[in-house]
Every structure is written in C-alpha cells, then in structure tokens.
Image 1 (cartoon, rainbow, N blue to C red):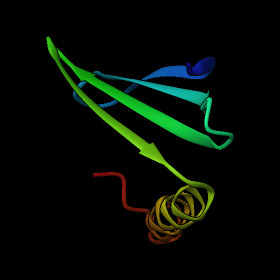
Image 2: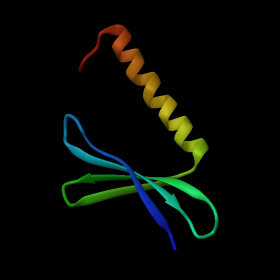
Image 3: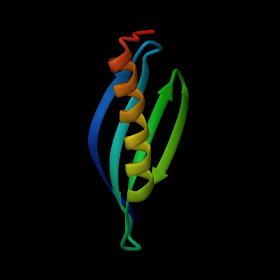
Image 4: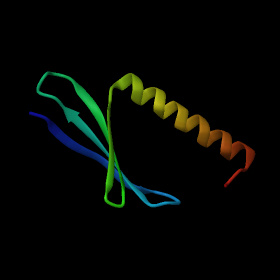
Length: 74
C-alpha cells in the first residue's frame, strides 16, 4: 500500500492549471515524487525518481533564470 504525503499545491499561470506535488512511499520500499496536474476535469500524473526530479528541476530553473537575465516576461 502507498503512503502519500502532500508537499505543495499551487496554480500555474497563465492558464490556471492546478499542480500538486506528493511524496509517495511505496510498499515495495522505494519513494517517488508524484506530480499531479489538473486542467479542468483532466488529470496528468507523473511518478518520478530522484534523478528525474533533479534533472527536471534543473531544466526548469535554467529556463527561468535565462528569462530573468534577458528581461523577458512573455
């Protein structure tokens, strides 16, 4: 059985998708990060490991920093 712990929940702009991050401790002895994205009635769910989370997080941070450095806002 999975044990799920809510980490964060927030809205993404500009389209107001609801994003929830959860820690999932699996009965098999491993942990994943669950990313739940809600768009209206539709859900997209990713369960990712630490390496994928790190890679994804760095890519997001790199993109955001590059936009901030160039002064781009759109």
